[in-house]
Image (cartoon, rainbow, N blue to C red; front, side):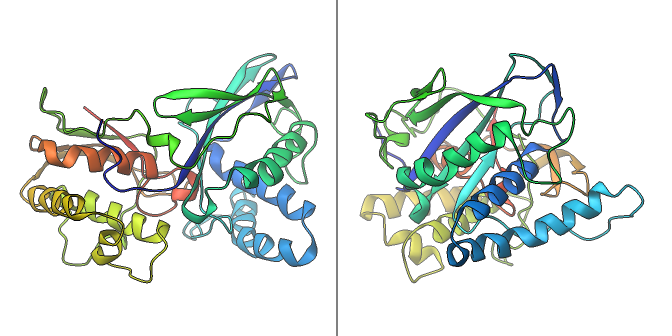
Length: 325
């Protein structure tokens, strides 16, 4: 087994909410309301000093959301560059929007870097989810909306490719203590030469502007790896904000493998793209598929890591993840 090509602390939680009213509808892009509602509840539950960074972080998003909700306004402002005051990803693959009694709504929460703290999940986020199930702060407590109309059915923690129950049938297992490294256990991160992979299918909108050096062209695969390096540099504890920052947590073999992948990504050309603009009230910029020349096996472990960590702008809202084919 080959470990993660770049070691990162990470907790992944798969969350299942069961609808307990006759009918609810979800917003077009669920993570935005997830961030607003859960973040507001968290800030309301904290002491004034602790709540201040949460309220400051949520204010631009709340203002933008209010403008979008006002159908009489023509919203031209860009989606705000904001997130919770901790490193969290709220990922919900866009799917159907209408759910009936007893149906399950799945989404994934990721806590990364210094925020990879299971106690933080238990003490801060889980109680906020419980409260959102039976009530919600204005203006989200509305008829036929999700908030106030669900219960937590299950929560699972990732252990490699396996999801281990943490909450089952609404009951929390306090004996199970996941670790911030178990997410990678059992994942091979092994270069796969059995078949040629060419396509990046973006599961959520992506926007890599500003996430890569200015001298990196967008017509080859290196732009994805550079965006991954930028993402990792934000997550590791280091004073460096460059490739040297990533190198400080890699051994000699790891550094050599990374340099090989970066070098082989440059000539891996973008051959075609089928992209559409994301709606202007969504985070991210583009959605669709990019087709490259056959991807060298040395690059695949880093692409797998990038898909797990999310890359580019608005990663808090689940942007910047993809599947390969």
